[in-house]
Length: 81
View 1 (cartoon, rainbow, N blue to C red):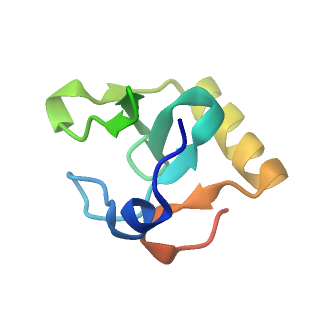
View 2: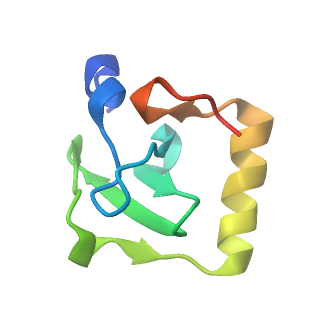
């Protein structure tokens, strides 16, 4: 289930308040600055810092390459990497 475009315009990382990359096919929002991933469960983003997953350097690289190749949607009206 895709997130509502209006929701994507206002979602920010709860820790650094910056934009997130949205990976619809993986049900996750990702903060590349902190290397933290936020799950989307049943169409609802879980934006609790304590529930975020810190990703490895290799996973970070994979996500950044995927974002660059697919033009991933970014929250807060930002541009994908």
